[in-house]
Amino acid sequence: MIKRLLKILPSAVGLLAALTASGCGSSARYIEPGGPEALVTVSAVDPAEWKRVAGEAAQSLVSSGALKRTDGAPSVVMIGRVRNYTLIHLEMGLLTNQLRQAILTSGQARVTSAVGYSGNLDRAVRRVRNNENDDLFNQATVLKRGTVVAPNFSLAGAVIQQNTISGRTEESYYMFHLTLTDLKTGVAVWEKTVDFAKQATRPLL
Amino acid sequence: MKRHFLTTAAALLLALGAVGCQDTVNTVENRDPAMTPDSVDTRAFSTDSFCRDRLALISMRRSTTPGGVMMVQAQIRSERYGFWSELWSGMTGTNPYHVLYRFDWLDGSGMAVSTAANAWQPLIFAPGEVKFIQGVAPNARCRDFVLSVREAPSAR
Image 1 (tube, rainbow over the protein chains, first blue to last red):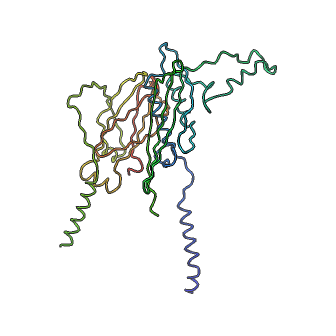
Image 2: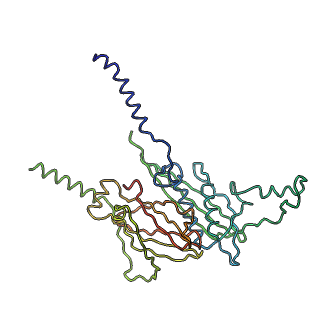
Image 3: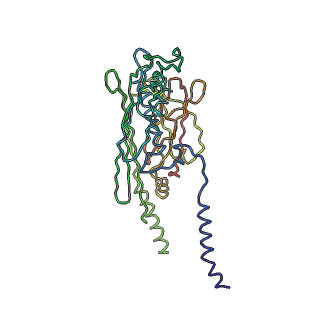
């Protein structure tokens, strides 16, 4: 009897361990993007950081008054390139889309989609005007050239990363720098740096 | 008797060590400030007594930025200094104190205005440290605000 029990003991323990391990997982659930439950990693820019950079930059830009024109007319901003000088892939739309929204919400400026970098350029603005000699379209409805508003400002920037490792501790430092340039003069009228550092220590074993 | 004495002495030594290892922040400022701030009369609703006791709101001020939007600034001090606070935070590994804050903005009709900046932002306090947190309204139509502060998961 004891021999029999000893025979099935490893299988029983294994089954119990498997059941316990499967019980430790959690089912999919919604969390607040960038909220307290969101993951924080050293090797990437996490949602909370994108929100932090976009928030701080938007607050600084709106409060500076740099977007305001002396003649009272709303400025037009083109979203240029935010260069990635880090070792990882960064989806800059996570930053520029929030900045576009913040600029529009501010009421101080509008954002152009006619010119810009990557996802901030809508090629339809040019494409619809290429139909001016196409007999498929009613020519009275085809948009004419010379109606698109040119931008006054360009918003561009860069992301820089520096990694440091000391023993089992790894640290990543990220610096976002954004610049608003007056396209008439080429002079930068607003600049903002948002930086943050993250640290983690690997376990001994 | 001797054993009891030794145990008590060792525990006391450990507690003093834990407290003594902490770096608190000391501040100095001019006695007669020249500034003329526009203070905000605040009304607080606290649900977390730990967070309420660990942070003190020293002042809440408002101004208008060159962009014509309202800016508010909260001056907050970490109250986690003193023997017992430092002993507890040293034992639980919650020094420095991590909190999250968020500004929500309301227009003249009391409707919340969505903005990129109304996400939870992290803030780290050393014991006794004073920090200024600023919020800028997303547009000139915003009239009121709500500042929310909570402990970060790592601070519990």
